[in-house]
Image (cartoon, rainbow, N blue to C red; front, side, top):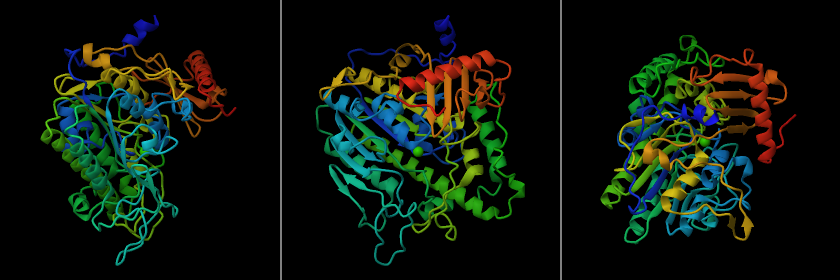
Length: 508
Ligand SMILES: [Ca+2]
């Protein structure tokens, strides 16, 4: 019965393909955005110019139910290890870079680490350039340079950088035109050039900090969008909603969730120009990231790697509604400004879902996931099968011909929780997860089939949970908890068992 039920999960639009068993192992590129909402990219309904992300969608598969772990650190831990973030302790886990390197891959990383003990180069990556934790100032993560303003920081924190095994704190780039999104890409491209002649596949993990706060973008990017958001977030949500219906991202039975209760109606906003600027800077950050993804895709073509390279694009969590205005007197955009775009724009960023980064509603944990693998994965396809960021480890192991190890460095390793998605390319189906669970800063969720239980507070108090049938109500607007108390009880118990099993002590 369970299997029959789970089959309902299988993709409606079926990616199919002849999987060539003896084809050379693919190069693997994983591109991660930081805090990018479900509908920001054009191919998910957004109005921001993202032609290169859209080209991945044109030539690949877009997922509509791809899950993460609600925030930077847990998602990255899960992606790297194939485990729930609660299980990752660095001793009983192994990273995808360690496994792929063991299998003969050149392992390269550029960008944001943030989610695993030690440095990337101590966790399987041959090369690394980037910021070790959090999100840094995009123009200068270090000390003030002569003739320039003091770079704004998140509560004064200096974010450490690392180049290969060396930690640099503070990291003050010499180049006055340094911009984090460009710099992370520059290093990635240099690595690809440097190892182009090697007779071995590569794994590149390019983890941008864009469009995480602070809102900082080159002026020419901001200028492209300034004024375009004067119509406000209510209209923007409607426009995105319409586009995602046209694109087929939203299924016919999805509904647009109401405006978040903490967001004001746009018509009641007085300082509209300021809000327009905030969203213009955000859009500029996404636009610039997309341009850099274009540079990377060009490099793959130039090195004749395009055909045998699997490219994955994803975001680490939903749009961010955190309010963190360190410099309330300086408008968003430049180096000396540290600003956020607030609940209402984040609500538009996560159209059509409810809630945000940190939450376990769909707006927190469901983000774009695009996979392009020329000649293997079907082009311009939408896959509605649920999948999770922890599925990357077993998927990439399988494609690389590597076994997930039972032991690593003499230690017993926690068995992988993720499930390979490789059969999705082989025959368009795979056995779904019988259960998926989440917990982050008190926000909890469990999914069984199309049923999702989500809530905060004491998990034993059934009044703390909402119950949704995601098949009928993907945007979680119709709480069925009162109607199905037994199911609530059953799923709450399952969540508590999971929390006990994964080593997290529920707050009771
Ligand atoms: Ca993030």
